[in-house]
Length: 202
Image 1: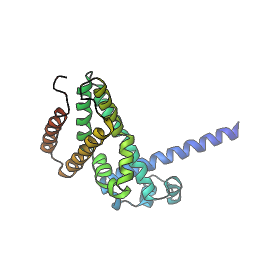
Image 2: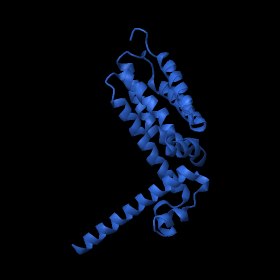
Image 3: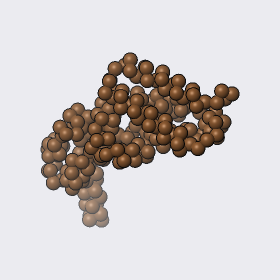
Image 4: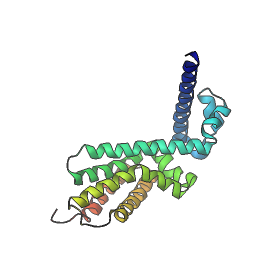
């Protein structure tokens, strides 16, 4: 029994250390950018050795990859939550898209996901993480709208990729411009774009 308790305690300690490294890494990546972060300093800030940090993440790139995945997951949850506040499927799509664009004002999303991740991780890996989070919600929303006849019957995957690409480009632009006016202009343009795929009789 004592051995089981000890093993459980060690597992909890390892999990706590990993969470602390993730949180500190996230804070520093958001503030200083990928190239301004030193893994040994992240470890020191949370009171563990550099070896412990390497044990959990293997490298600074490994820590960054884990932070990106965490922020992407939260972004997907934010998009889904915004959509779920609406009852009408069309308004769910609009609300989710607006939430995705507005998330660029979050320093962690802006610097980590939109600015650094595409170059540090590479386009393919960055896109794969996006597919697992917010892009998946977009595909589900479009599928619902096609099935309901709100959008003309068509293959959803290419439409989802077209919209996702436009949204990512807009979010990247917003991350670099960073003004409230830019967000308002982008949301207005988004509404025009979405209106163009809606069936007139819907």
